[in-house]
Length: 298
Image (cartoon, rainbow, N blue to C red):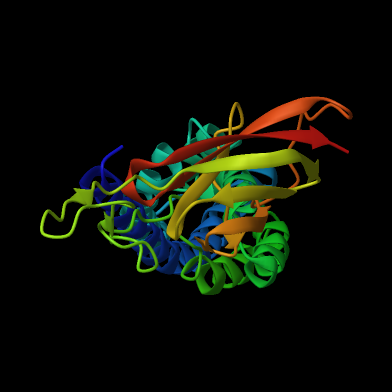
């Protein structure tokens, strides 16, 4: 992936996060208005049934339908706007994050007052998964609480407020690729030993080489390994092959000449790992340098 493609992917994800936050804003009001609409319809139906049981006929007037229809229309408009804003992020994460398809179904169900509570349960599942996979410790906890409350009837809008607060600080899911800068500690050339005075010539610049030292370990969502480098390069990103997830924290971000002890942290405890098995970590650095490191799961 080129730097331009990577940066464009970052921009698209950030825009989707912004749109999700706008959609949650409308969904909060849609939940409140939808609750009012549901009550109006239930009261209307209850009144008609009582009238039918006592008089043998249901007396219906147009005025009885005016307020439920108006409130329902407002709720549908708000929920439609929320659907259009929120579905983008759910769609982008559908291949890498669980419950995204359910969340999209939930967005559709949330448009209609009488079934919107089922919709909010599905939306809550999707928001919970986003928080678990991509949130920091603080955001993860806020979205856990918010998602659980979102699935509770009458309190849906409170849970949506929690998610509205937390999702704005979700980190981009693909770390940006930095522009290449020549390593500051490696000269572009050096004098060739044994040159004849009056006939200077230069040895060409040698690319920086990086490789793993020994065997790395993987504990939960944290990988520890050692890299040896012949120069200074910045680490752009790291990913565990077969899990479609990128690291959210790499320490240090720059390798220097010699041995470097690297710590790589992923968004969540990886599912499906086998104790004692070996997994491969892909580390991408500046100057198109890629290193594959072996990790033993402990």
